[in-house]
Length: 124
Image (cartoon, rainbow, N blue to C red; front, side, top):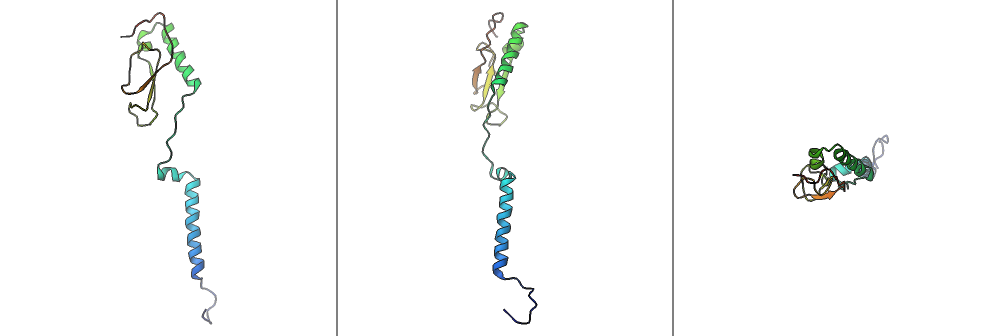
């Protein structure tokens, strides 16, 4: 320490500790505000189809059947884009009114909603 100075100097240790503290603070802010997910890509979300959603789709299929609306009954499908790529792929699921419905998505996992219509026996 040099005599004659008025105490306006900072030690090198204090400057280094302050810089490290600032870096840690910025990293903590990014982590807690969700910025780390955007930076690192995050964990892909798992899309779950609720029972309520399945019931809604079944009700729509039953409505098509009760109205004898063969076109909508046979062609209705409900696509769940599991991998969020906005393209049909093997990761995705297609829900159809019944096993007799037309097949919209190639390469997808196809599931039957189990709405069998007596008045519509075959889809072409």
